[in-house]
Length: 214
Image 1 (cartoon, helix red, strand yellow):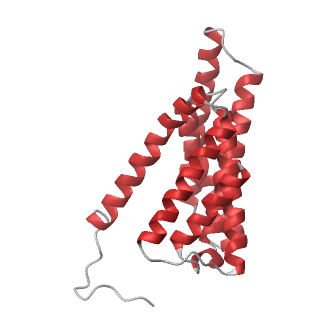
Image 2 (cartoon, helix red, strand yellow; image 1 turned 90 degrees about the horizontal axis):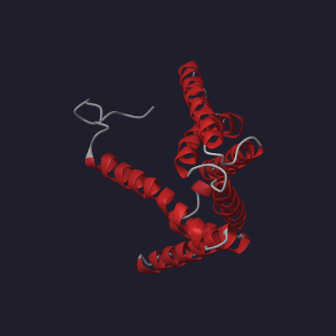
Image 3 (cartoon, helix red, strand yellow; image 1 turned 90 degrees about the vertical axis):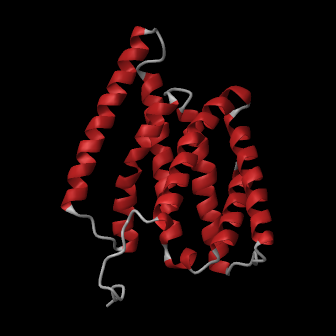
């Protein structure tokens, strides 16, 4: 059983060690949707994703070298890195970019809030993580809200003479497939094999495999 701090007080959630990384992650993740929107007009989706992760792999490799760390993984670590890279940095992003040919980037971004659902289900099946009733209730509310947004998207497209019916449905299917592959990658990196590997080396190899797959 873990012990509490010496003074018996719980650590506050809003301390800098949590707030700063969370804020940076939210800003970077939020800004990536603008980059995707611009990339769709500059190059074919697959090449946009390929160059994105070639640059990312190089950057991660430089970081590994700068910190004097090893690129070495165990054999199982390389298997997980390859599967993680192909699901997260290849399938996920290729499907995501193609979904945005049919849906606005804002709608796809909101749809990614559904990521918590397959994360919870796969985490329960493969990692034994418990799913609470409050989580299920909150998820149902979120899904209802996303459904209303998608209905509004279809109505706006119809009034503007844009893609409706099959176009909207295709975008939804592609976005949902992207969410599922991202969730599979999340569960992989939470497994014991991945957690035993050096994180920066793991990300380097995953990014490299993703770029190769793209």
